[in-house]
Length: 72
Image (cartoon, rainbow, N blue to C red; front, side):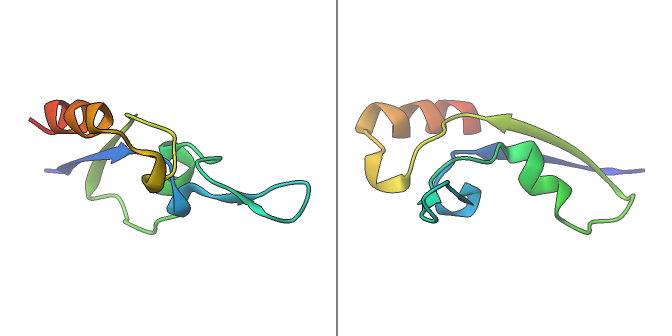
């Protein structure tokens, strides 16, 4: 039986990718691309949902409420 894992992506530093100017672009990679880089093996059923695509310093109170509601 596979273990079910739900990944809620919010963008930010971990989802950064180098831009044309050489500086990192926050939230450039979707959650699916990040999960594909993991070596978890076959024992997991992974579901990815991109809740937000913004850097953490740009999160608003409403963004936190949105994330809280999705976690619930």
